[in-house]
Length: 338
Image (cartoon, rainbow, N blue to C red):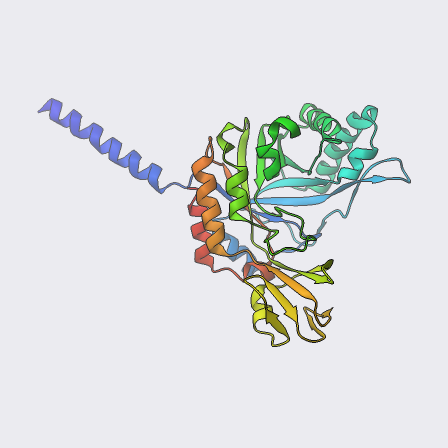
């Protein structure tokens, strides 16, 4: 009888802990905030709570080269109109312009790391555990960029994260692996939107598949960043003119446009979209980010990650953008990584 009670006790423990583990959310759910003014309404706070968002990756500014001062300067810094909601953990993000790395001298890297450290402390009015650096480095700038990251790693009290593009996953031997503890795989802006072709420049499932076949071999922990935005690329005589914030439905509902293919449209007459003038015979490519594509990309990535991701981030938190997606669809997108 005593042995039966012990046996029963252990089974109860297994069931209880099993239920607990299954019900707990394993990943942090986050958004990027990429606007120059921080302003979050009560409705927006409720939206974040409904989705169980607990992380906000907050762009603090762009690190550019100042020819006047002959040093790196943080520009377009964020203005805090509202305080950061208390239920959100904040990860400050600094975007580094590649031209800055072209101009900086190696002897100034330590001073630049110190400048970034002080700028983060000066701008961010709340505690943080992680600093993210966003930079699309190339072969020319790799050495100085990695030295800057190492200097930051030595100087700053926070864990360091760096954004990683798809080509930097596939060609890691050429591009190198940044000296950070964590990377954020950016699964958006996959090709040049200025190119005149029918390929979606924001997200492409075939490209993700091709570039991540050896994802499990990437040597650092990877978080995942996914897009929640769309745009329309405007071409005139096959030459890129501009990007317009709009969706395919905008063109489909407008009788001024002729649908040429799944993503291409021709302007039948002079018109406009989103208050932007469009001329007759302009070709427009609608780069929509559809939820079903995001789910397929997410499922693929989750199956290939060596270490399951800690943070799933959507780019970016903008009410006019996220209203195009059903709350349940976004909820299910996060759950694919749980």
